Amino acid sequence: MDADVAMCGDTTRARVRDAAAPPSAQRRDALLMCAPDYFGVDYIINPWMENQVGRATLSRARAQWENLRSKLAAHGDIAFVAPTPGLPDMVFTANAGLAIGDKAVVSRFHARERRPEERLFCDWFETQGYAIAPWPENVPFEGAGDALVDPARDIVWCGHGWRSGAEAPKHLERIFARRTIALKLVDPRFYHLDTCFCPLSGGWLIYYPAAFDIASQEAIRAIVPVEKRIEVGEKDALAFACNAIERAGRIFLNACSDELRARLTDSGFTPVVTPLSEFMKAGGAAKCLTLRLPGAARQVMPRG
View 1 (cartoon, rainbow, N blue to C red):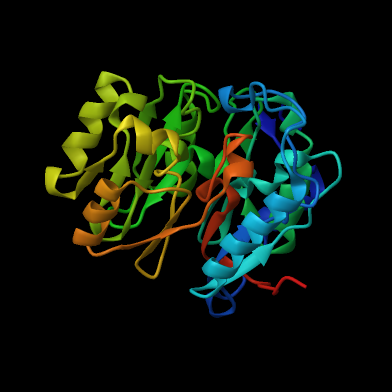
View 2 (view 1 turned 180 degrees about the horizontal axis):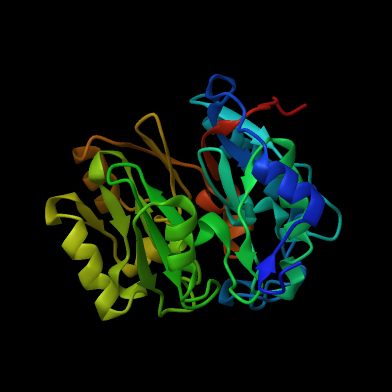
């Protein structure tokens, strides 16, 4: 195996990569989720986890997750990956990788505590028939936590600076043949792009400008016109209002100030608050708990 390329398994991955993609007719848009059966704050890998080890309440986390799942399921398909003992952060499926069409990049986690998830997510993608793209061993990349597809512009926004390497954007652009915009994150509280940035349909964008360096703020302003930019203040940002999911014109999010609610409503969206306080203890909310699978999941199964 090439030492510079991360592989899920030489033979299996080569077979999946070279196989013909399944017919598009078999595929439906879906969100990938993982039940929080083993969720908890067992270690510290981001600022949100400070002083939270052992303090998550599993019964409340399950209820909050189920509330989010049921609301999302009312507006589209949900796919599931099985939770695994000893992997409390596997519930945050946004970090599984990035899928576009029939191709997927599996995450290369920065934190060693999450690296065992890589094989499990790789197996799931392979089972679903994705072609798994090779990824350099020495470039950390944390999937759709840091790489967000802009539905209106056919581009990928890629955050780097805390969890994903500065080289990640160029690799994504090569793999998916899609323009990729690098954005440098500078506030450790917003360690993934999806904690402070959410592209929406119609070219709209929710984001917290102070999470980015000056060059990245300028890049955002150059691409997204002012009338489409919904800038949030620190209070909304710290409530993970940008860590949101859009489905059928509805914006599902942990919390929403009156000001942000009014701006979203005026922009044609319907905010839906789904409290996720237990997951906030680990540094995640609505978007972190889902991975968008645009036209790709073959086996969409209801949760039993």
